[in-house]
Length: 183
Image (cartoon, rainbow, N blue to C red):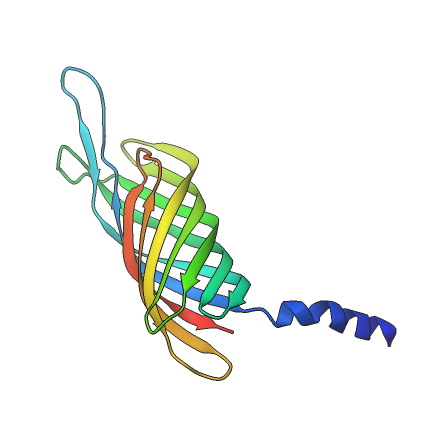
């Protein structure tokens, strides 16, 4: 019986914190790359609509200030490769997982800024085969609204994310809608 009380005492501060689960539906645009030489080839990619999941844990939630740590995952998506503007049967597969931190100022319209470190993987398939794994920091800005409710607080907002370092075959901008629940 003492073990149960001890476990409850240890778990109480954790349970009093805010958790967040959300989904991001966004449009990704990609960095172009080129080959050197007499007849260089410029590789462009179609923009792609992607879905990513994020979980967050509020470390600080005092009045209008919310500071949380986050983890995110985007499953593999596929976009068309266009050397010199011509669509070819080669696809670019892209996926990432990431960890980060976010600060939100909660008002009628909540605004926030944060950083992620994303572990990214790009794979070209068919004609130009190759896999490229890398990590880079991303900056995120958001604005949204949380619906008032007693226990679970649904929210929705707009989010823009951009990498702080460029990388061939990787996204250069992500703009979308982020929504989920806080509890």
